[in-house]
Length: 144
Image (cartoon, rainbow, N blue to C red):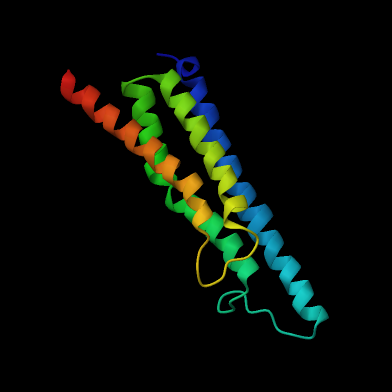
């Protein structure tokens, strides 16, 4: 097999990391500096780590949830690509990345004490994709 065999999963992996870095450096970092300026304008101190600003909590949640799911997703993607089907891994992986990209919008711009239940529309199908890729890989291995 050549690297060209895995061009789809490679692209999906790159897209996932691109999304994660956008959330980390764009959304989270951008939110932090925006809040620092807003708080300073009001003469208040912004506490990045112990404050409870809902906008910062939402940005953090988007980054951390994406990071928390990184290992299961990438492991299942590559197991699927190597042992079952690169085409299926690519299609399911692309759908997963799209769902992860929607997550921050479903979460909303601000988080309160209760997390938005809308995120299930992104996380539920994403979990099913990971479970399917892992399950079908295990099935393929046991069937041989």
